[in-house]
Length: 369
Image (cartoon, rainbow, N blue to C red):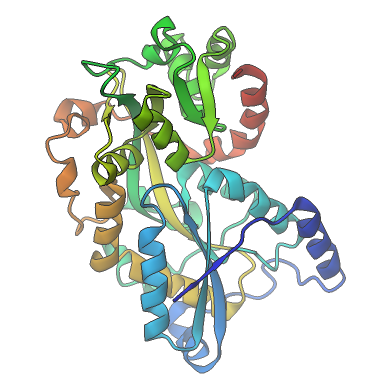
């Protein structure tokens, strides 16, 4: 069994850890990681420990935890330590630790949504994968290859309208419904969920590079939110009970919760179009050569047909690999219609990453509970 770590690291502990290491820092990039082929003997010969970050929302952690146990059975000298939390809650700690000591990452490999991946790009947190040596990378289209090979895609979730079926006799059809008087005090989101600010911005003449109309719209509707949920599980719990009735959120998280719990919630693609939220597997800068090789080998395994198919079936997301089938449970859903998929909106995630942290301050200022 893989070990699941307590992720409650304080900022003080992170800074103390960085200060202790400062005296003997090796400059980042000073030692080039071995390629996967060249470093196999390292992994086979010596004990290696890597930390794997998996998310705690709905089914998001299941595949990674099962994979880690299987990988350790096949590689007796490798120990995989699972760190599980929500990305929004844990990533600031990971970023602070990296800034304190970039040569000793607290996470060696992880599952990251595109916003966090882009934030890591902006802060130089990731190492490049040796894509040519990864046998399963040939099934991943170029659109899922990250800049400078800083990770590789495994799937895409879609952002649209999650709603309570008992409150809505027919699905809400527009992003505008999030700010409707009909649901004042009945909307729930997770923290720093910039997608709903973008939705409001686009309805008011803005764009991803001009979110000001969105910030203005949310500020003009104080108390629209019932709560800021701690993560997908809490958000879906509130939606299922009818405590909240509407959210701009993730299709996969919504529908996997719906099916697993027989909950009266559903997902609908807004007429204006859904937003993409890809998932990436990424290895951290600062890994030792042996850790780099193990992480790359793990990523190559996880994008294989066996594990990638399990991932999309559990998370109900759209596969990246051309050899992976769309989950059967998604077939026939309105979000999968040709018209809905034609309107899906894509982003420059490097731009999103550079702005994600400043947007957090704007969220606190304008999205008022």
